[in-house]
Amino acid sequence: MRIEKKKDGAALMVSLAGRLDTVTALELEAALSDLEGVQELVLELGALEHTSSAGLRALLLLHKKMAAQGKMKLKNVTPAVLDVLKMANFTKFLTIEA
Amino acid sequence: MSEVYSFVAQTLADCGVPAKYSPIMEMAADEIFSNITKYAYEDDEDKNAKDAVIVGLTVKDGAIELRFGDRGIPFDPLSFSPADTVSGTDEREPGGLGIYLTRSAMDDARYAREGGRNVLTLVKFIGDKVGDKIEDKYRR
Image (cartoon, rainbow over all chains, first blue to last red; front, side, top):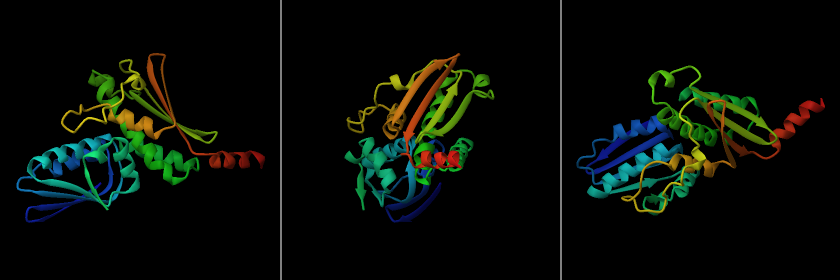
């Protein structure tokens, strides 16, 4: 998986490409372990092919962290990833933008 | 893990399964394989044994069958209560989500304890296109 970060003041844009699985979810958690001062986290998922439950867990952790200090949104979610988010009912609390 | 992915992807391709089924089968492999490596063995020596986890894949009669076998603690993942997908984020208990997603993505799942091994079989129907191809081969 490829993780690219772009910081713009208090906003952090993170692009993910590839897939979120047991191994890469840990990479994502490590890459975003320090979110100090970030008030808006945007996950650009247009190139994320798939996610497993480990990826969902990472998204849930990020969501909780950001709920305490700002907001988080997912952009350009692919159909395969959206299916998984729906199945797990994550669409209920995540902010998803086209 | 990457070894399991390439085995699944390569075998599906070799069997002529359309590429669109590959990600979903690889994700199922990720869920089950990681559960086995995390929970099946208490002892590191058993865990690292060559036959600790055996993954098999068959394509026949318009279906993909992905099998996992381990010598670990007897455990039927299909008996696991469904993951909590209703509660708010604060009340949610971790775990069970992988099994839930895998079962939702598959058309059938079977568990058996056979000769001291846990054997889990996941089935995904892919229609009869691949089956037709095999039939063509036989006709020739």
